[in-house]
Length: 347
Length: 206
Ligand SMILES: [Zn+2]
Image: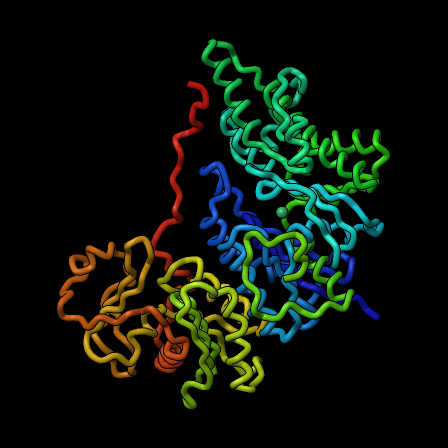
């Protein structure tokens, strides 16, 4: 039997992503980003993102079909992100996906964005080994998952209780006078800096926090600590050691992310860790992940960057998994759910 | 034969034909739930009609004005359906559907939230039966509507709280039949994204 050709639509944040897969084979992954429109605001503005999705939708669909070398009539199913994410942005994708599926008379699968990040890994030549711990870090989410089965068994171990890690990068970049998006700017500024120069706090890592929030994250205290440190230096008339501040901040984020992820691998006896989300683009996060995983005997998987940031191919890939598992389509009544829990893999 | 979609107020989907008139229409005045309802309504209209999508001539999209989040659902659906079916998108100003068929000068008003209103004025219908828009769509503070609409007292007020996709579709059919231009294929937001540029990071130490 030939594997199903699935078109995926992703609009949960600021990337309009259309992906096309055949089974576990990637055919197209086209992304239109409104990131530059958000730059002057220093963060994603939901209304700006939603307006951009509406305009990018049809051109991105057309380009994805061209790249994949398929025509609409070939599509076997449509998949769409129904949550979690920005409600107004999600609704553009949901409205479009329902109409497209009806126009094509094809089944529609509403899927979970976070599980989609995990699903991206099935597009690798080597199939995903399960169970795995998954650490999904972006400007919109910071979540630690235990994935026993991609289509039927995903558990949320922990998540951020305030800012997402990507947001912390943006906010700290801003207070250091660096442009948006903060991740690559902090990476650049950190070159040659000493990551041990300043010991910034590791959120929710004290013994009392670890009891209640073992796998949860918090980055707002870290951001405040950096702000306080920078103000003190400036008030004292010292020149800011930008490279040291950037490297030390980045180290604090990477350290806490990987300490908690590897604790989960150890506690749950799962020797596999999958990374996903835009923060994976950060060089130090990848480097520290490789070191820590090697030391702990944990297999590390990082999909190619274009499949780590928000994209439609991961949604198509998860949709194809659902089709191949014989799941019933989602029907037409689902909505956009900005807080869709990871346990709801298919809405 | 046209499929028409409007989510500028509630959710409304219809299939209309210039000769046969309204073939199917499904609507809800619910000002939320656009994303939930849109697919079911399109499906219901296609079922009522029983035709094949290839025999449609186009997909009519109500371009607003209306609250943005809901408005976009219908435009996204219209564009995606048209793309999927290989048909053209026919953009129509949603207020035109409300004024369609009304006699005499009318003022169409839609809630724009935050104590503001979207409004348009029409002098009546032309020989083709199409509403003649004389101003708008515009945005006004609710308290200043009387002041903003010139000759306010001379208009009959029409509430745009539910825009009928059937009327929207019939407007499009008439516009096409009489060689009139369609609206621009741009959502009528009439308001900038709600963003305030901050003055820079605030101090955290005193
Ligand atoms: Zn994401």
